[in-house]
Amino acid sequence: MKIHKITDKVFLVIFIILIIVQIIVLSSNDKSSLNPFYDYHSNVGIVAINLLAVAIDISLTIILIKAIKINVEEGIQLLAILVLSIVAASLVWVELWYGSTFYYGEVRDKQGLPLGVNNLGILGSILFTTYFLIKVPFGNISKNKVTIIKAFLIPLNVVLQLALVNLLEVPWNLWQS
Image (tube, rainbow, N blue to C red; front, side, top):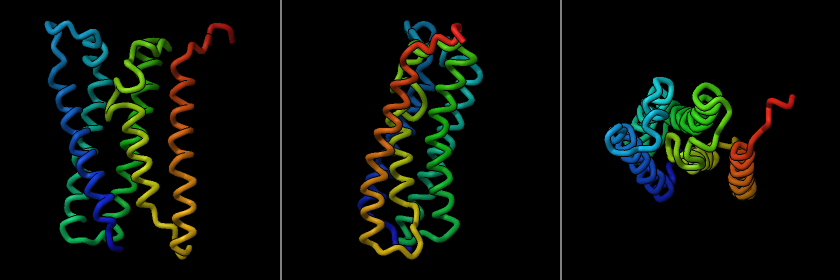
């Protein structure tokens, strides 16, 4: 399957930027720098999630560079791109869940939502799932129908994720249940 050169190159640049931002965040967590999120970013679980996010971002970037270089995505390459995109997006939500459940005890306003988690939080999740939707093959469906389906799914993806993050930003009052 031929790759979409412009789309893939744009996402490649975005993934490289995400890697750089992740590395800066991981390396700049210094207690002496008045970082209000020092304790959060020093938590072993949060560090593990962020390191895994960097590893996945680097892996995805390497696979994408190879695909762009040879101008073809083989079955296993495409599968790896799809799986890594979903895992990268999922790590954002895992960190939001982990941070609010095990670190802050369901007080999510200290996490720096929506951008203060791995891969720039909700922005990264939207980017990775959008890339997944762009790349996912739809079998024998005509190109026009695939374009219509993707034109519907991509904005729906954005709206649903923004709605979900808005739900996370308000108190759940779990003590009432």
